[in-house]
Image 1 (cartoon, helix red, strand yellow):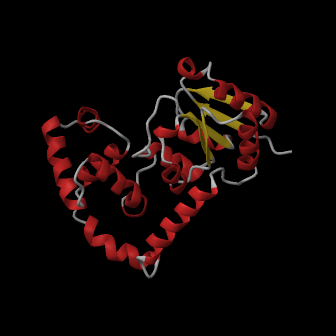
Image 2: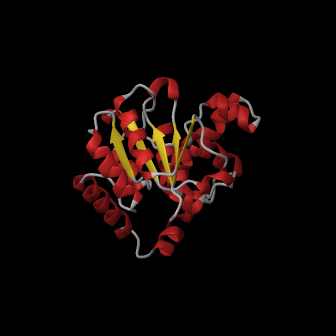
Length: 229
């Protein structure tokens, strides 16, 4: 029998007493041989040992923007968001970014169990309305190009003028980093960060940080691949 293991990324102090959180734990114990939890994800080289990742959303607001590190994780592994408020996320955005399902703080325990069983069997756990909306968005996007390769060629001119430093800034913006954090990570001044940021705004036709981050999440995986950690 295949050994099933789950990893929970959570802030134990803020979530341990949540009713939904306890439902998740009880269900996981019935479905998985091994359950580990921490407030940080495992190192990249250790992630393949887990068959499901559960991300505690209690302290996050991902309605307008899904973090780049969460998208990267969901592209490779089964990912579920749980213990989250409805107003804090957009289900369609999560689905389009490869998340497998969502459980809210108000989700009944029987629905949590049913959903985790389905997800563990390879299915998605979203409402039909969300699935329909996401499918419609995909159809609209794909109809804009005669083929994926032609689409990339068509769009390439929009991105080829980005400098290496501007790409680095965009990657960090997509992860929600502030100007000071970007300056520290890239070892440059705050003023230089602003210069690169404004240049990136212009080259990507973005009006603000949220639009730039959304641009990155739409195109960066195809045209500006992130280096492996």
